[in-house]
Length: 547
Image (cartoon, rainbow, N blue to C red; front, side):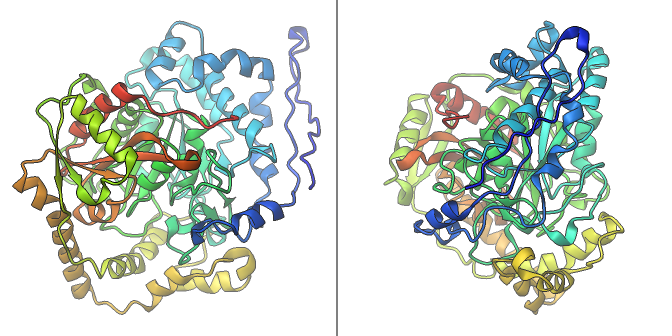
């Protein structure tokens, strides 16, 4: 196996300070055969890899813009600042900055240094990062100068975003070679974050096209970013998808917070797989403008964080009505979710628990803890509903929504115009561009559904999704339904109901798991409050070993 050669690229420093020169490691191609071979032993097809490295993106391309940002930052700085940053929540770090113990510049540099430190290690890399902002430290320095204008806790805080979300100055690839030249502008939610002073640190890897390119293929793989690996068990534990890189990056403390996107489970799955708090908001609470789509009916961005407080802060930073996204029009919005987090009791709150999940020991334990906190828990049988045309909805939407994104948001350098164009482009070099096939895209191209029929399917699935939750919630007078990981994500997606997953412990082989709370539309405030009480009482999350 080739090893990473730490070629010392000395970056200039001020001699009088005698600061040790920062060294940027040079990444070399390595023998991935062991990881690939070991993955074939996994029972799940989604864990059987054909390759791990990207064939189109050299990691040194990511690092090349970082050296000058770390020219006055060393391993010593990293070590001295770690206790102020590692696993700390946003308010705590803001307090350190207010006290003069930390600056936004040093905070940003610490995260960049940490990313390079572990993603350049052949025994620890995870492929969680797809690109880094070449101006991140410069932007942080500006925030230090403007700190007196701080009005929102996201001010000056480094955020990672999934690489299907537009951010000016960085490519938005959706993990696809066809979008390698997509220098798209800021998505609406990114404009909102920047307006409040947030710093976009970089982009995270994802399941290509948000897990809607290939059929049964590994979560977390994209042609541009390679195979994302779960830090709790590299090659042994699934990353979940499609926001795989956002999940893994947050588990590894690569940023203060991250953004994922969900159509059906794409936040809940990777968040629970990386022992995180992941919130899938009500569809329409947050704008989808400037985000590479699957389905305008179901898509939503959402925060992925290590704790509820940071989740509420990031959610509040993204809210706002987007005139280009009709789903956001006239929806109730509470942009100060983080100010209402308090309490230590769930007294008077009624929860529904699925009887068919009760064999799960972690679920049982979580329910007992909720009862100890004063919550009432009622077991129920999940209603039987019709859900057969869910894929037709996604196919029909993407057939229209992807060309619409390309026309309205994509760079002029993007030559493909629709799914068929992408498929034809990939077939020119399928080994590099689509090694796991294009079954999902084939479904989009071959789906024969009229607009009128799609409207019927859309209405029917929404009604059935609502019935799945409303039946027990109405008959049992429930405030929330309790699920596991992303087990109920498809139903919550169809119903457009918000859901949040919170660490509830670890199963065999250190597999993280989450308890998932589901409530009615636009009850994110209630969701965060319930989650906060559970989180503070249990504090079950632990960071991955060795990082």
